[in-house]
Amino acid sequence: MPPAAAYIHVPFCRRRCGYCNFTVAVGREDRIEDFLTALDRELQSLGQPRPVETLFVGGGTPTHLANDPLQRLFQIVTRWFPLAGDGEFSIEANPEDLDAQKIDILIAAGVNRLSLGVQSLDDRKLDRLQRQHRRETIDRVLAICWGRFASISLDLIFGAPGESLDVWTADLQATIQRMPHHVSTYGLTYEKGAMFWGRMLRGQLRPVDEEVERQMYLAAIDRLSAAGWEHYEVSNFARPGHRCRHNEVYWTGLPYYAAGPGAARYVDGVRETNHRSTTTWIRRVLGGQSPVAEREILTDEQRARERLVFQMRMLDGIQRSRFHQQTGYDVDRLVGSELPLLIDQGLIHQDGDQLRLTRAGLLVSDAIWPRFLVLAS
Image (tube, rainbow, N blue to C red):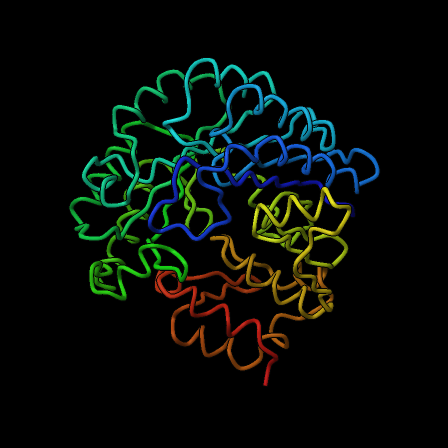
């Protein structure tokens, strides 16, 4: 099957936050026109428009683009990836960037799902995360967005420097009061290349205690679930009918297109990742060279193992029989002795044909996945 999903990476941002190690370009508005020209040129390699059911424009901060370049971006993207009538069109946005005029542009382009990178509704925590917007900014944006998008999602970070469990539970309560359709919660990680990483090594920042971070994650599960959000993936919660369909493409191991600096695509069993440097990506594309920095052809077994990991991130887990039908591989033979061990440890629950993470398994899921990706002994 050809991919039915596409991702576009827009690298431009107002500033680089201390925790960020994504492909971003700060203070390079002079490259936006070249970026748009290169994006169109890269997509020309498709040969013809490719209809999709989900389209996701992320970054970076796509809404950092001024109105005219933003409209041109949408013209390029929707020409090459026409969206099905019931398709999901998501865009990531910074609350600082949105006003009534820009929202009108999003709606006119067909965007129907808005993913707001609020990170917190606590002003002091936002300072610690080096975010410039405030709670009143978020509320202003929500007031003008409500009713205009089919789905509004809020991204939250827990485990910020100096954050207590009480601060996080207050953040959760403030989010619940605002009733977004979707909530994503992420524990703060200190990534190499990010400013926070260097500050941690110098002793200027101290990560939140692991036990407190576990309590924060469980608080998110309990409070959001009790308030009516379905916990459907390790980090994601949705009101009924508002799961992120685009991300479910990733989590179910289906193929997808992607374009832009640092973008990774998965087509015909081949994974390709573009150059992360925006300047290098633009230079290569406009110079008639491939933008690809890494290319990997996955074996059938590698595809099956990755699909197993992605699907086990979903709270529904997997059905052994369906997985075998999809991949040609038997889960028990693929994972070997690791599976009964994880079941005995109470990290995976087995119910007949069904396998899924337990509550204890959710807390250590990142440590489980490497055990699924290696060859069984």
